[in-house]
Amino acid sequence: MVKYFDLAAARLAGFEYYNKERIHSSLEYITLHQWQDNARRIS
Image (cartoon, rainbow, N blue to C red):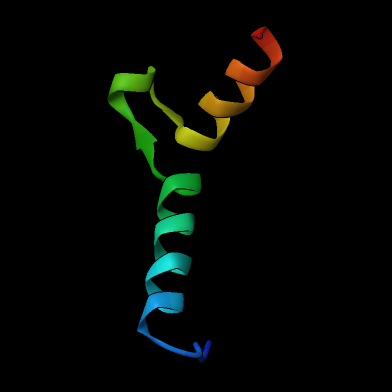
């Protein structure tokens, strides 16, 4: 079990995990992290 310093740290950890792991139908079923990596490569 992970222990966090405060509620804000726990929320941030959850938000970071959610954005890295959840696939988005509006992004052609890739994760936000993958989409951001692709955008960086293009620009």
